[in-house]
Length: 269
Ligand code: SAH
Image (cartoon, rainbow, N blue to C red; front, side):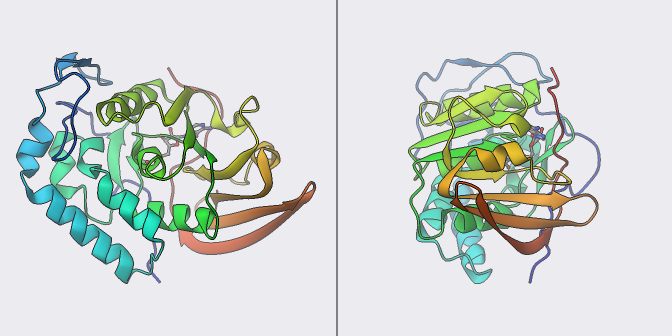
């Protein structure tokens, strides 16, 4: 069994710079749109073939195809998840300097001390949460750069995602806008530990950061029959899959050991 890690492979925070580009097969709503990236000056989005795709060239399709093959070899079987991950250009969600590593099975820094989740972790969490069901309304806690939300949006009608760091909320908004996914993904800036009481109940909830315990509020916001997946723990963490089987009944299962960035209360502007 692989021991996935969602922590940055190297410490420190990589500052995003450069442009949000669009890969092959993607088009911009307005190629002259100005996109603001956190921690960087305002830059104009380059017309269609921007730096990311230019640097990665035609390789991104091939690298993504290899990533999907690797995920299959690692036991991911849900074709919806594999199709969704082959449709989302992961290299557009990381800093230009890391684009060539975007299809490795690694978590990469996205700034603010946070990471984009390792592909295997994203595939595993979504597969477990969506097994034998077609969730219509999903909550993600911890948007980060928006990659996992973009994957979910490929086959889930309504994706709600909450991020507590303003710079990352804005980054995700810009990335998802460039991929024309803002309608399907509804982003909120706030403390995801509180869930979204006005939107609940959710058919599925995925938590992308580790708390010592899964917040009970989130369990309450799960629809009956719905599933929540979250890393739990401090230095030693495990993925926990919870299914709500009744008004006051939750069934809990422990899955693999993982390493995620911590779930924190409150917001950071
Ligand atoms: N979903 C991401 C991974 C994000 S990393 C992906 O697509 O790869 C985890 C994110 O959870 C970080 O951006 C962190 O800021 C955020 N986070 C941590 N605690 C949070 C909270 N209470 N509410 C919302 N976001 C939180």
